[in-house]
Length: 231
Image (tube, rainbow, N blue to C red):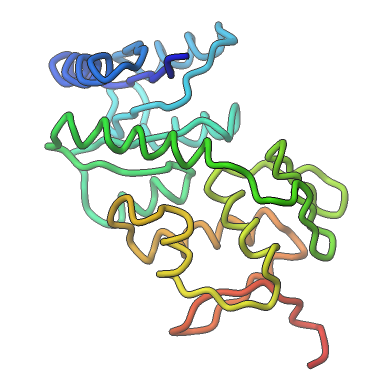
């Protein structure tokens, strides 16, 4: 079955370039010139895309706002941000809101297709050997990508889920940023250390009372442990 990719890009030439490159690589594509057109189509269909290629600078609404909207509607869809605004802060903000990757303009169509494929691989990665992982009040069902905290369902992105699964499966073990990047992205592309920090920040917020259990060891990395537990 061919994967569906939606493109949100106001520049007709760029939108057509992206669409052509993706279709030639075997994807089904739909293109939208505005956030409004995209949102209307998204709400009108049950056939959601697997990945959205999203321009940050849209004429009617910020692409960053649109990331937040997409994540509220469906946290499992892959999002590739594409923008001429390529400085690190913009990338961090996009990742902080839930984007999977960020590609600055100008870019090669081949690289864009490669990054879309990488997002699909990460989102379809096989679950951990055990379908049920639990630590304290955090419970992950890896067969359904379902998470509860003290019995309450929590919505995570695919990357957040996989990061949490690594930590829950290895409580007390310290992971460097480099090790987490290798486990999550398998050296598919250059990832900033800041990317891990952003995802950890997100998880701390979503895990509520257990957020403090995601501990930072300065200059070393992260671990999941109960700070109140006696040593």
